[in-house]
Image (cartoon, rainbow, N blue to C red; front, side, top):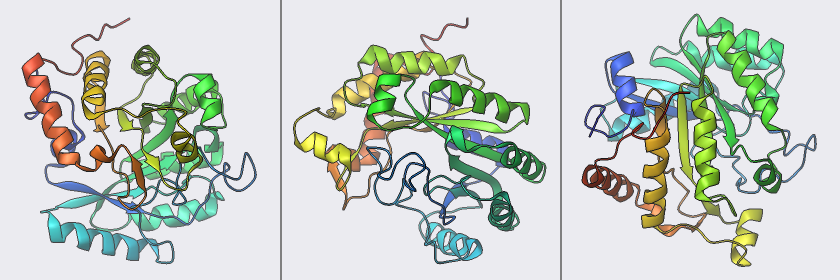
Length: 309
C-alpha cells in the first residue's frame, strides 16, 4: 500500500508540512458577503443543502474585522493544537461576490497578517470576473492564493435539483482562467447527492482527473435542519449512506483519483445542532480511523485504479 506520511492518500496535512515545514491550520473567516443564489440574482433560497450560514457555520463573526477574526480563530486553535501558522480561509457564502475594491481590502488585510502563510477563497465559478482574477493573480505574488470552487457534481440533472445555478462549461472556464494565472484550484464535491449512483460519482472523479486542479474536497452529504434538502429527506424522497456504504464509496473514489491531486477533505463537519442525518458522521475521528484501517486491509490507496489518458 502506498502512503503519504502514513496515509493511503495524498493528504492536505502532508502537503502543508512539505510546503510550509510546520503545523498549519485554517482560520475560517466571514467576509460579510452573500451569494447570487440568495440575493435574488439567481434565487433566494440558496443551494438545496445550504444552511443559513452559507457553508460558513464555523467561520468567524462578520461583525468583527478580518484581523479580529484571525486573532480569535488563531487563539482558539492554538489553545487546542500546536499551530505554527495559518491559512486565511474565506469560507462563508460566495467570497468573490463583491466589488473588487472591497475584495482587495479584506484579502489584503488577511494576507498581511504575520501568522498567515496562504489565502484560500471559497467561491462559485460564475463569480470570477476579469477584475477579480487579476486581483487574485496580484495577491498570489505575495503569498499563495488558492481558489475553492463549489462544483458538487458534473451531472446537470443533479445540478438543477440542488439549484447550483450554472452549467458545467462555466466551471471549465473558471478552472482554465485560474490556472492561466497560476492560481491553485481546489474543487468541492458532494458524495451521496440524491439519486446519484456510484457510477455517476466516479464519473465526476474521472472528469476532474482530466482537469488541471490541485486539490479536491470529498464531502459526505449532510442533511441540515432548516434546509430544503431536509424537507425532501423527511418526506422519504432519498436515503443517506451508512458509514460502511460511505467508506466503500470513498475508497473507490480515492482509488480512481490521480495520486497528484491533494485530498483536502474526506467527510466533513456538520454543525451538531443542525445535523439531521447521517448522525454517525459527527464521529469524524472514528470515520477516518476506520477508513485508514480498511485501506490497509484492502491494500487500497489513492490512484490504484487511476489510468492516465
